[in-house]
Amino acid sequence: MMIPLANALPEIDYDYLEETMLQLLAIPSPVGLTDAVVRYTAARLEALGIEYELTRRGAIRATLGGREAQPARAVVTHLDTLGAMVREIKPNGRLGIAPIGHWSARFAEGSRLTVFTDHCQLRGTCLPLKTSGHAFGSEIDTQPVGWDHVEVRVDVPATTALELEQAGLHVGDWIAFDPQTEVLPGGYINSRYLDDKAAVAALLAACKAVRDHRLPLAVDVHPLFTITEEVGSGASAALHGEIAEMVSLDISIAAPGQNTSEHAATICVQDMSGPFDYHLTHKLIALAREHDIPHRRDVFRFYRSDSAAAVEAGNDIRTALIGFGGDASHAQERTHRDALVALTRLVVAYMTSEPVTRRDRCTMSSLAGFTEQLRPEDMVVPSTPLPVPGEFLEGGRQDASVDSGGEARDCETPQREPGGDPKT
Image (cartoon, rainbow, N blue to C red; front, side, top):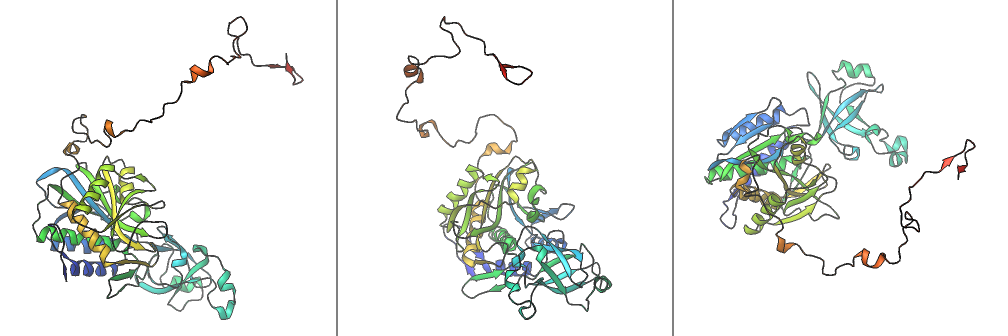
């Protein structure tokens, strides 16, 4: 199915996008266990004829050549997901676990999963400590929620710690929870790990549109695929000095109090790390308007992305954040085809646009060509002037530091006698 785009943007191959997303979701990739998903993404880039290189640990930096090399831009997504790790081999033959990334244990309860041991993979289920109502009665409804209150029942005959160890389980084994993916005919997509595999698929689909339609690029574009975003470091790797602009693609939060929609792209103006670059953000807003791309603006209070990691690592770059609207992030996530198409269109529009300013080709430069947010005529001066305090306070003021003769007195700190009373 080819979805036509308006205003000179080419068609997006949505079948390719969905196929890529489903294949990505089939590959377990909690932080630290990402080699397989890196290899898959690299193969996808090779099939599109896009050059790329890898960091030592596997972050991918691809290159789409433009008319000029600088100021280059990056579009970044992350391949890593949430997960868990074995922290305890318990005497009852079950596993205590710790989360990888930041998510609530309430969304792990009842989930099927795979434990990756040194030599094999074992299946299991994450359960609350008190599971059966027939055994614990109403206590199953009153027990606390948290990672100390769940355990993993591995599908091996084990009722002791020794039997688990004999089955090959160790502290430090990785755990990947099943994605439980479901794509509905009406366009809704339910799954764990849409954050950020849906955005990875959107970026690859945008790259495919650029290649298939031989779209000219004003400057070099670097699609980046990071592997540690869920633990905070993300795009601190794979960036080179010539990159002046970076747009992160991620899930956007559709929830009460937010402006995001599951049927549109979101342009985030600020997250918990602070405001994104004014000029790059407003450029994306202008592109969305120009190409009739459904979009919302939003501000996220409890959210950070690859952009924050890049800036905190010392990169002097303009950053922005756009995403697909999604419900229940870091839980059983849901989005809609509309949001993925809108996001992909916005990425294509950005890739093929001019840079924010040519001055950004230099890391240091003069004021010439520097951006301007507010002109003098835009700055409103208060229309009601305040009176000058000296004009109405001077006559009635008695300065305590000046004696009746008009000479200033020294301020002395009262001295205390040995007994503690002030000495006059």
